[in-house]
Image (cartoon, rainbow, N blue to C red; front, top):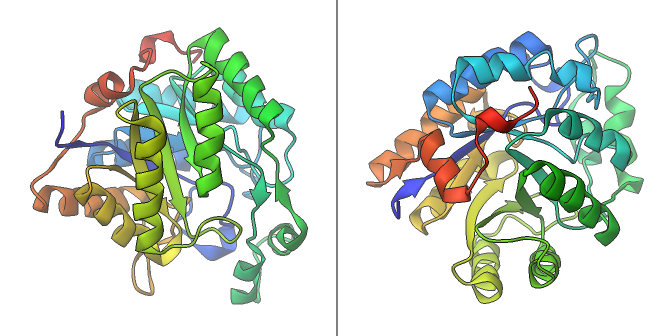
Length: 309
């Protein structure tokens, strides 16, 4: 499957707020509908957060996740990947509540604590749909996204060992690759593991193509042939970085969590629109997208029949 490219799609996330786009899925119905459409467009992995349907704020409540997880599973064969990052200011217990209940094939796993700054986004808007949005964003000038070694070890044990969940290891900087290597060397993470390299978040590594080359070189040095890699880039860098990653033999992640746009100054009307665009680029490069079945084989996943929903 050397020429197969796995497309992941991050449907709603915990970064963007309802004011920013009318197309950001908020309710369980919207999340389910956009997930199913994105899978039909070619996404093999669907990365999911949940939101309070009343005002769109990120929520860790398993009851909300369970309003869309079974529906997505019943309507498509895509791998369902649930966040363990949650939303800003959630405790680790809150972040783990839904994954522990759902026992999914995959979860995201952030590989280090970091400044995670979104306050600059608030300067772009004057009128807000909900009162929580502006302070949520502005408060990130004094926010540390906690992912300690103890937290990571706990998630690997509770989800990985107990439930057979594998991970999208989110690496926002070069040091996170070394954190991952620490757990690989201890035997807590076994190949083939999936490394998601993330560019353009203030507090992480910048969206510079040379940085992607260096991240890939570092991962090759640390992990050899034991890993698969993917790239996501925030905002305007999304499609350019994904295209470059595909050309280099990597996999890609798009979605409204990472960028609200489909082109310069033009909001994406759905997650499926972004998936369709990157699929078209991949196929024009002479590559093929991976099916969910192929993604499961490439990443050694347990299968959708062994989840908790």
